[in-house]
Image (spheres, rainbow over the protein chains, first blue to last red):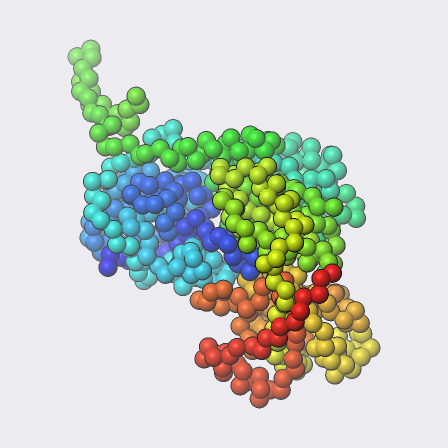
Length: 339
Length: 243
């Protein structure tokens, strides 16, 4: 069987797919990739179905050695990715030869990157998914993060070396964090429990991702959003992106490993199309919320799905030229030719 | 009055009220049951809670209006195929001592003996109002009002798996070791969360539960059978009393 040997696990590297559907009624969280857009593109690049299991790395990636010819692709945030010490591009399929060492280094921009392999990661399915749920200690590699000495099994698939060099055009790359990040939300479900001022504050204030932020939730720091007095809700199911308001008034955004039920009222919910961007934020990053309508949220979600239905560019869309001008000759490489 | 609240573009909350009430909760489970019995393309899953049902759906396949219409249609429809009996599962509990370190404190606070607390805890039939916040944790309704005590002022950092606990008017069982602020009356040898099995949890929302006091030797015997995968908890069938 093809495998990847873990030379160093990185800060927090876990196996993730698109998550565990259908078990929240039993209290089992969904889990899955924090940036599902990048996960799906990593899989497409290596010829997989979009939701196969891949590695999600956080802030500092792992070092891995291939024991066979394995086609891989790294998407998501900008990390210092190299093969045998030589930098290799992200958002592009790369063929590893037996003995090759892939190092993913540090996050230069964004917080998470995704490493997909042709055939997907072949860890056992637990409750219908290969996603690691750390608190529940299930999925992935024994329910935990990768560490030195682990062996990651790679699924069987037909020869796909021809896909090497295929890449995602610039226009389709995942949005990465800026100095201040606009995150779009829909009001509710409990915006009526907050004062008009609180709802306005949510839009006008600037929030910072707190240090106590993980795959379960991000704690935000900024203007406190006070609830009306004497309001509380009985515990109910929690949608991804829910902005919960505990009594402190400091928002908590619920993410992939969120608990299945909770009793804090939710002033707004981050729209599906902006959840991948949230997955790329780290503590200290800044957020501004912008309220949109249901129609707009749906349109943005459709646009994202359209992007995910595009095909990667073939190697042949790259061109090299010799350009001579004023007696000098330049060697020009066009990384992408847009028609 | 039922309200439909959007939580983003791919989740709908069907809210039946804001009370922890058996009649309201039964309405939640009835809708959940009907939605599962009549699958709709694009409906991903539904998550019942005390007084609401969260419905996850794919809005690119299933328009919100269609989903709301589907839910409305199934709100009141009596379905002939609906279960007419409910199961009551018996949960063995070793009360007190190191297994239930708060038993005597609770007894002192409510002015009963430890034996009386056990008797009151074990004599009622509970309803699983909802599952969560962790895999396999049942929120049980029906606790004797005399046993109502507030949560611990200082939550424990470690509650052992299997701990049978109460807080305010709720009863529950911790499926995994975790922090917790409820009072621990005893411990069950049963596994409430077993990810390798299908379904991965022992209990589910809408089910009935009864506790049965066992002695240490019986606890150890059941624990060994559970470890060997041989223990099947006693289940009684009772006719469903419609509220």
